[in-house]
Amino acid sequence: MSLLRFDDVAIHLGGREILSPTSFAVQPGEFVCIIGPSGCGKTTLLRAAAGFVAPSAGAVLRHGEPVAGPSREVAFVFQDYGRALLPWRTVEGNISLALEAAGVPPAERRARIARVLDTVGLAQHAAKFPVQLSGGMQQRVQIARCLAQQPELMMMDEPFGALDAMTRESLQDELSRLVRDSGLTVLFVTHDLEEAIYLGDRVIALRANPTPANPSLAAMIEVPIPRPREQLSAKEHPDFLRLRRELYRFLEYE
Ligand SMILES: Nc1ncnc2c1ncn2[C@@H]1O[C@H](COP(=O)(O)OP(=O)(O)OP(=O)(O)O)[C@@H](O)[C@H]1O
Image (cartoon, rainbow, N blue to C red):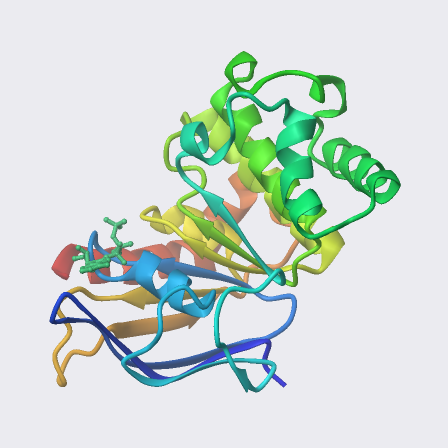
């Protein structure tokens, strides 16, 4: 059974159709990237998948059950790390917060925090405050916080959009590795089609201003590039170049 399924999901906000009836399914362990022009409803789709926005028509199903609201099984990583982390809490304290809210006992909290900080390479920085860390490190804290919750689904909304190119590539590789090791399922929104192809098992392309003839779901492509992927060789792979061309044309004309 699919971990997540959109069955003809339409979403209207402010009297406008943001997402026209859209159907797709996400299997456990899949990494699905969502691209599309600004305002096409990528964030709205993530929010609907997480139960923050109710569909105007159709159904969002997790494990075959309608999603009724937010769940601890779903964790978010946002682009704006400056606002996503509490500045008055240390790295450790930020990660602990969600676990405290979930009632995880202190000893297990400490063990989970140590484990996830190790996973993202921040074990030496547990006692620092966000302001003492670079942007890339703050994003690692957000990812660690997400992993500590042990969700089944990780939603990432342009998580690397504000980082420089080098940091971005190294975080892409870290993310690929830890997703492969953990078996997490990921929905990842990005503007960057190379990032979508490099990270995704599948890429969903949305168009803005849908009509019945041109619905929101413009394309859904499989990425057959073998894993583990490596930046240079993956980006020279014939399938990478083919998909980049296809998606580039799509984005150019939308
Ligand atoms: N609560 C709301 N009420 C009314 N309109 C909304 C609401 N939330 C989002 N919108 C509108 O829905 C459209 C899609 O927004 P959304 O943030 O999902 O797009 P996006 O593809 O993620 O855009 P971007 O790439 O710029 O982040 C936008 O036009 C936005 O103004």
